[in-house]
Image 1 (cartoon, rainbow, N blue to C red):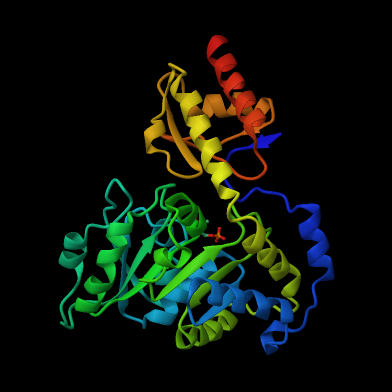
Image 2 (image 1 turned 135 degrees about the horizontal axis):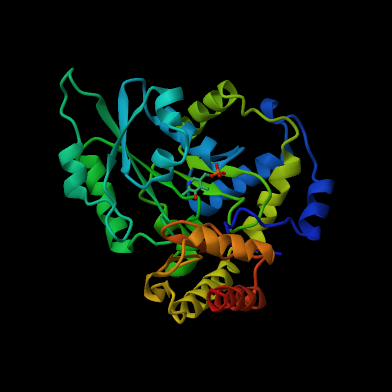
Length: 337
Ligand SMILES: *Cc1c(COP(=O)(O)O)cnc(C)c1O
């Protein structure tokens, strides 16, 4: 069985399970869980923010950030492809009464700041109040250019916005860029980290920002039912992956490139290896529906996400052999047609 659908499918290792079973715990709603506190302090210190908050998911961490930054009737500007616009059930609008203002993403995943500027609303009671600019890194597996990040702080200050980053896969961006970790998050007033994507923890995300923001977010987390009790059991896994699984993301990136090169050599598919930067590979079926290919692969215990394009994600539970088997199975599918 090999699963290329997402980097969320990883299984916790025995070491991780052992650490979880032995983690000292307390009631985190009282602030008493030493393992949660250690993780939050460690992450904040490492990434250069004042405070961090352990959350049940990346969706929750983004929602807390938007609700903590904005009031009812405010709006957040984000990419048309942003996870926190497209894939989070409209939570910011539904639960926060915060309106999204989506803007077309550029090919590199960034938002053109001239287009953002044109979408910022003036102070007029007809309009929602433009309050927050939200970006995503990596986005569709792409790393936002460092030179672009450098332009963000002056822009938001000029326009009186706060700046949030959906950093579900920020460590993929950090490892790929080779830059100092903080360089990629310094411009942002807040950012998230998913511990349960490529880093390989079973559950959990972090929201980082100022003490004040995190204190507001903690109140909202409780309101949304996200106050967890002996959460150290899962925070222990988060601590482990931050300490041990960051640099190995480079292996996932190398595997993704290897996979893309193999896919590009199959004439019934279109795949552009030069577009692959981290652990996500897109390819398009030129013959047959991708759903037919996905069904044939599933027969052999190989899972991927069908679509136009289809998506393959590498992670710590797939290796070169799994990729070779995937490629062999795709070739066999086309031979059999
Ligand atoms: C997965 C993901 C999230 C949400 O994380 P969940 O833990 O699945 O809720 C947010 N943003 C991005 C970019 C993601 O890939």
